[in-house]
Length: 208
Image 1 (spheres, rainbow, N blue to C red):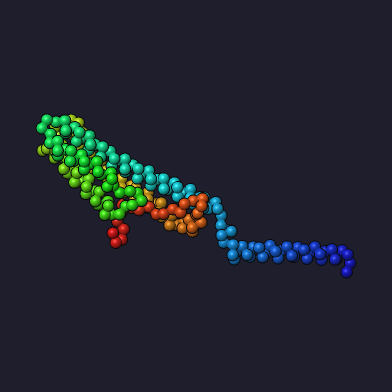
Image 2 (cartoon, rainbow, N blue to C red):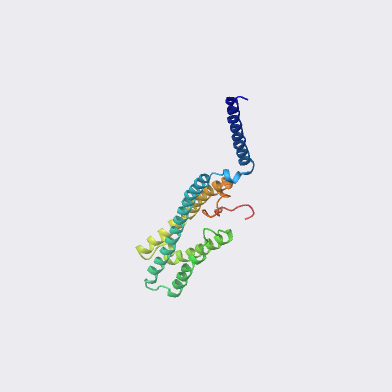
């Protein structure tokens, strides 16, 4: 065989061998390299969006708690105002104040929203306010301007409870929907990212 032909044949053999190696590597990656082919940037993007959605839900939750804390504080101020009035029933007002101070310890948490606990908290707060209002404004007439302002403030805050819960549920549902949509990406979390969990809702689900 002429030298030129042998050289051309040798180059062709080498190229053919390289093509076989590349083809084999690509085939192996397709067949058994699913985890190796996974793009870490995808997990980062999903985690980033989950963080944004979770922050939105947390902001709604904190706004709701701030309103509830304000209601408890206003009740405390109202009872203090009433204790300063002539003829005040000190024992009754003290009992109402103690019940008000126990509310935060009985309140639900963002990670635990069983309907029974929500109902129990709402019942305790409603019962307290229904006991406070007649004392604060018997016959609809508060003894002082401060007392009247406190009562009106409590009524406004109490009327806004449902709105705060709806806003939180809406944000939590967006987070949960995105989380469910990207379970494949979430499955790759670990080490760098904690595995996220769905957020509980105030809305009653099936069987509740």
